[in-house]
Image (cartoon, rainbow, N blue to C red; front, side, top):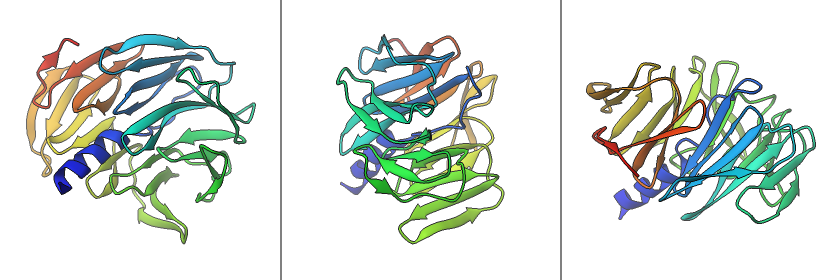
Amino acid sequence: MRLLLVTLLLTACAPAALRPAPAGGLQASFSGQGVLWAEGGQVTLARAPGFQKVAVRVPVGVTAVGWQVAGRESTPWVALGGLGLLLSADGRPVTVQAGRVVALSGTLAYREDGSTVSYDGAPGTGLLGTPDAVLTGGDGQEYAVQNGNLYRLSSGGQTVLSTAAQPYLYADLTGAATANAPTVATLDGRYTLTGTALERRDVAGVLLASAPHPAGLIGVVGGVIVTLQPGGTLRFFAPDLKELQL
């Protein structure tokens, strides 16, 4: 039962957020329900299991995308920081006044000053200053990268876990970690897009498998490794890196 709960948590949370993309660039969020991404001001939702791409109509000025995770259910959201709004992206016209949001985790929206608000508009635990990346970790707690530091956030404040954090934040079994390239961790290993390949490594870092793959972003949806390339190309892989046709 514990193994099942950990698997569900990692599937729901990893990764809830990646390094924020530059203006017009690609940013994405993955959950057990599907993939949500923004590129060039356009937002697209692809829900599992069919992953049919649906354009999400939103005003200009998207600053973040993310999935609110509540148990086994996830809701996609889009942040419009300039307008101070969160908009649901799943067909329900829900709008939340949230301020200048720059990043979304599984439970909180992070504003430009590091303060947070929940998806129902209630204030939450934050950090001091603008986050570079945030997520809800494999232990259900909040994590953030800021200026090369990795923090765990709680009602007691922010705890420094590393002063040499790498740019990409991802959830793992015990909480969160960072990497130099887009990475996701599951019970089957750690998967990384190096820019030329998709690699699978064990907990000790030993290379188990590799497949040619261009740069992109990576996540887990329902036990499937999903990659997203610029232009909206989705690819799907089994845990052993066998490519799947979904």
